[in-house]
Image 1: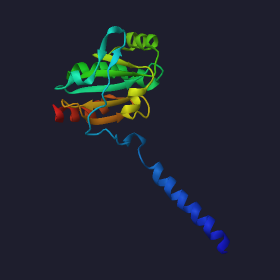
Image 2: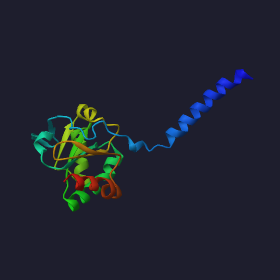
Image 3: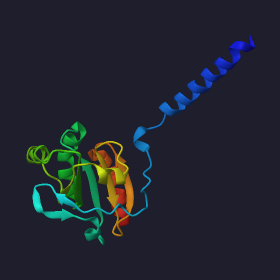
Image 4: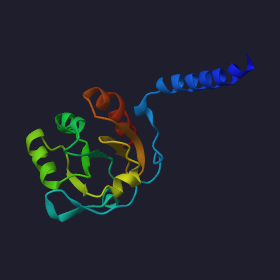
Amino acid sequence: MMRFMLPLAVFLGLAVMLGLGLQRDPRALESALLDQPIPVFDLPLLGQSDARLAPQTLRGKVWLLNVWASWCAPCRQELPILVEMSRKDQVAIYGLNYKDQSSKAQALLRVAGNPYVGSAVDADGRVGMDFGIHAVPETFVIDAQGRVRYRHLGPVTQQVWEEKIMPVVRAVQ
């Protein structure tokens, strides 16, 4: 009888842990960068060989960083929403084109719309790793001091924009 109790206890313990883990929202992952300065980087802008994006030049402004790629289906879906919402609310969105081919990224923006003031090319993914990117798309709200104030994992929908992103933007403006 005792011989079966240990395996049964181990099985029940694992089942409880699995059950608890399945109840969590995978998009609710906290960012290690929350309320921290964003990583320093200086990257070329997509389609602009002589221009670069260095976040320190944006100090004093509230802005969004949207990490995206042309090979990412949810990224393609969110582009028109980002175009519409950023125009409506006058919010500057910068892109971080993550592990992508520049020609494919530019083609996607021509077709789906380009919400970005500029999109930095992170071809090797090193800057994305500094941000702790789990999967694209991810969107960060950056305050005027250059700190991450909010991170959204997954595509931005109109509801996400209005209920999650814009309240943070308004709070830090």
